Image (tube, rainbow, N blue to C red; front, side, top):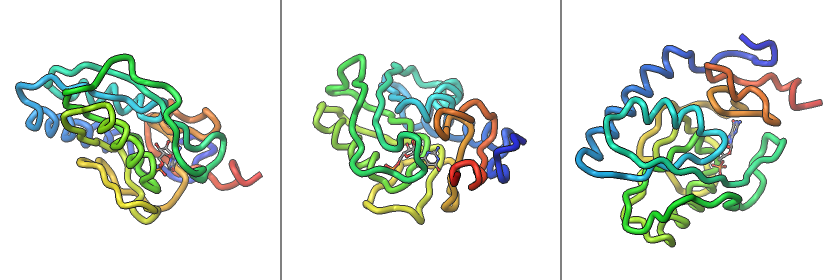
Length: 179
Ligand code: 5GP
């Protein structure tokens, strides 16, 4: 384990098994369609690439970014779209791939964003959910793991741009960010 981590919350093996299940769920749900899978950068990038290789659906990949944290561990106000999609989603089924649903504000913002762009449907697949932190009523359609209120890194999730490449999901030591 990385020395800055307190403990591993989800192991590499547990992630792989659950991602397979999520991929199968997408295969059933979107059989015979051609949805756009949207990666919310950067935190969802590792999950996104594993998830899409675990599904048999033909998907278009697209990418966008929403600001929320900066180099902090607490969500800072209203999320903003900072990088737009490459393609139009008008009339398309959208699969939004999220790293973690925390306050729920990002999800509310993104559901509104896709509705404004004329998406036919929006299905949210989230790697993690911290239900105890919810501020607005918003939920993913498929969640891989529920986690307690801790600051999490690994498998795409960062603190100040570090730890995204850890293959597991871990709690970061408080001493790392409470300096
Ligand atoms: P929300 O808008 O739901 O409060 O926040 C969602 C975003 O906050 C996530 O997409 C993620 O980037 C960030 N976030 C929330 N909790 C954590 C966490 O424990 N660790 C990290 N690295 N990012 C988090």
